[in-house]
Image (cartoon, rainbow, N blue to C red; front, side, top):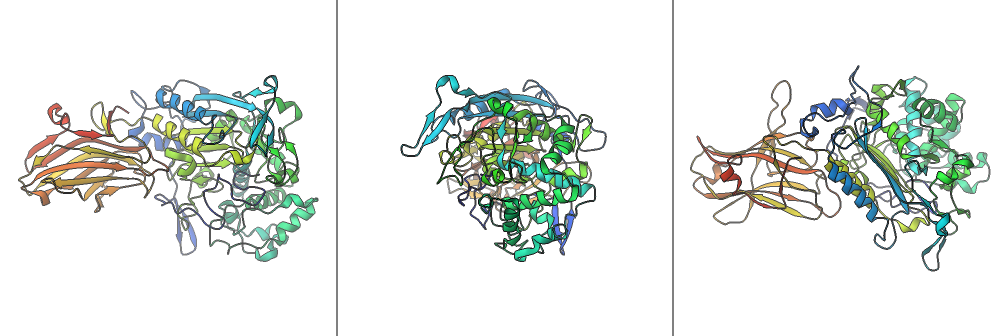
Length: 628
């Protein structure tokens, strides 16, 4: 079982799409443009460079300890444990992160989402949270007649520990992708070359035009998986791959597929003359000191490995009993535990080292595994033709369905079917690792990505947003399926030059959630108020961005914008203004902040939120005054 497909051919709950289609989530940022068939890459600022430009997300009392920087010579930290304050994070959301994760140890709703998990969260070089919860080994079997787990005796159950090792499932794809990008960097692999130019037999079934880039971005046309494990020999498995006919024309659609990374594995092994597990060790884990990351962990590791599934027909493709210490995915098992799409085992700290390496621009300590330019490609959207399926080279981008409020056009990560996930947000220099054994005792017990979203929301909330002025700003909150309003008192406007001014900060799930400026005169229905925003920055003042519908949605860059709205249409009226923030029931962003509200009526200031009397007349439903 991979991170995103099941061996019985059904789509995994980790993948919120059906085969051949993608969720149409609006893409609001891109680092790659399709120009006449050519690719024009626009670098995306990462890590410390982005963090330093984001004055709205500094830690308490000043700049957060975000440390890293993509620019040459910048400080690039290694990991150490520290307090939330040292990381530039807020403690209470981190505490809530743990409580939210623990809630999924109970029925949610019918069964626990996982038997246990290891949670790790940090910012810059500081790991501010590293917490095991629940059990690494709890069940000996699954009873399908009663839909219950058969527990080991209490003295044979094993509690989760900080260094518990997990079957990463499809997070393994990231390691294969990194190895491929290394070869691209070294000039041995061409991104736009056809796969068949390296593996001639691959051209069978009409696959002669599939490129390396299409493998890395899941646009090759491969269906999600085929049961390679049913062929007893490696030659037979390869023959199935060579004969496979694409489900769609290469480059015409996004289709997440294990076959892409298996094919990439074969290219890497052909180019280097080394098997994938040796490449992983020599090129990534040994240089970075990731000593608890490998394929096929030895038997001595078993007491420290989280168990996965009681793998039996019909829910599994193979009769294996309790899988513990061996790869869970059937096809990876069929390849001897070493496969491009699944099979890597690791622990939370090792993955944090990998996260820090990428946020550092490819370097950790004295070891560099990628150039800064290569790391840029991991965070660059190559799938602009497929909105909602943003993808770098191997890494998924801007996916609220598991990144929650950490999702931005620059956020990268991946999930694994066994219950694992990794999210990196270069904008705030934060990283989140959730490793759970959610197929223990059986894959059908968990659905969706609720714990991933809940924990990501709390880490996003832990990054403070400094008010534009003063000590506090109005904050919308981050509740889903809700409406929050912030209403000014009735104001009499007599000038043809009346206007609203304020500072605005927003980050919402694109298109689904939004912030609306509305007006009501004389008790009439609320109607939209068009406005413009300007994002401040160095150099020439940018032109104001119009919002004719009186609303914003998506990602604002996580910086404050200056807003102006012409109120002359309400001259002579008693006018009330309000901000309305609405969210749907699925996912949320970091929310919205409003500060420095001022209404000018010609030369007069008729309302100023910095005046205590005016501030006390604001009506808030759902909005709160927040210092962060």
